[in-house]
Image 1 (cartoon, rainbow, N blue to C red):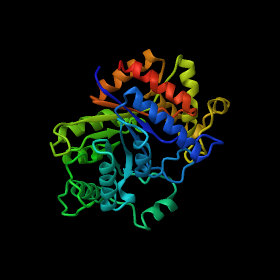
Image 2 (tube, one colour):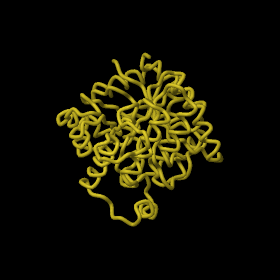
Image 3 (cartoon, rainbow, N blue to C red):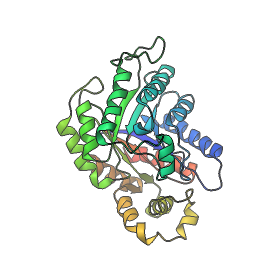
Length: 328
């Protein structure tokens, strides 16, 4: 079992802690990831939620790249329909100029919120984009980043000198087909739609065409990983995530002690339990086996771990144990 190990950080918003406090806790986590040898760490674009302080990936990328020395830093993802393609290309070209050979640009389609008033504000009252409009936006970003659009993103900028590497986020075969056609590396949202991972990966490989961005198919799988010294401890740490997953629009993450005394809402319980069962939770040995199963199912070249754990020190401990589970 050989794969690269990376991390997805959502700047988890614990109850009773300020945005500044959770951002500083994330800084400690990211520095530890750098020390542990994780290949990359990405930040998501979420709007209007009490569960995450990860709102503007480009700002977080700049902040955390400045506080690390080796690890690649990127977006997981920046949501193309919320932004003008040229603006995205300029942001990531700037980041790559500041931190050459360290910047990733994971691109996704969703709005990053359930609040339709925020969607309308972000998109200036535009209607939800079609699959074709999304594909057009992604292709526009790629043309700007490659220099093919004939636009100078930054004075003195050279597109192939340490530039941002684009990826496409996917949880469906439609996104897989787009990534394959454009020759982009792909990230599967196994932590959200694990039932689609194998099919999406297979379709991506079927249609992949080599490009300047990738000469072969490359699959990264985002998987929730909660690793602890016992199965009971892992379940305890994962309980707040199950509670949040079963309650759309819920408030900031409960602590494990608070979550332990709460029942999962009946309406969302089945979904939360089904998704949780397909992640990687438990001891080092259990998670090692689960990693192997996910890699076998998807042919993953890389696993991006998402330990949505309330306490930052426990989150760091999970990352440390995950390195052992991966045999790295």
